[in-house]
Image (cartoon, rainbow, N blue to C red; front, side):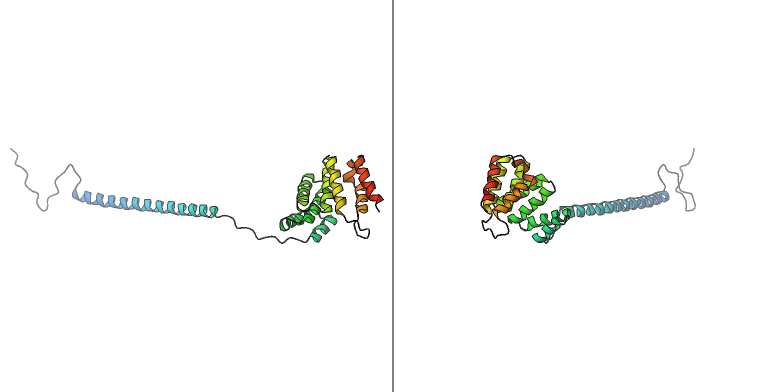
Length: 216
C-alpha cells in the first residue's frame, strides 16, 4: 500500500498542478499588466490624435462661419475721366469707371445717362436700358437722360414712346440761342442719329424736328 506523499522538502521540486505555477502566474500577470498599459497608452494616443483632428475641424468650421469683412470702398473716378476713357476707345476701363460712379453717385442722372450712352455705343442694349431707367428715374427733366432713353426705345421698336421721350429731351433743353446746346442743335442731332433712324418715317417725328428747326 502506497504511503501518502508528505510535504515537499526545501530541496524538492514543486508539485505538479493543473493550474499555472506561481512563478509563471507572476510573469503572465506582469505581461498582462504591460499589455494593458500598452493598450491604454495606444488608446490615449489615438484619442489624442482624434481630439486634435476634431479641434482642427472645429476651428475650420468656426473660421468658415465668420462673415467676410466688407471690402473697403473703391474711390470712384470722376465723370470727366470716365467720359474721356470712353471717348478714347478704352471701353473696358470706361465701363469699370461708370460702374464705380453709379455706386458712388446713385442719384446722379448725368452719370446714369452717360453710362447709357456708352452701353448704346457698345450695343449692350440690356445694360443701356437699365442705365437709362435709372437716369430717367433720378432726373426726369434731364435732357440727356430723355434723349438716350429715346434711343433705347427706338432700338427696341417702341416708336411712340421713343418720340415722346425725344420730345421731353427737346423740352428740357434751354431755348437760349447762345447756349452751347440748343433745341435746334439737338433736333439736328436727332435727325442724323442712326439710333433714331427707325423714327424718320413717322410723321410726328418729322413734325417735332421741323418745329425745332423753324424756331431758330
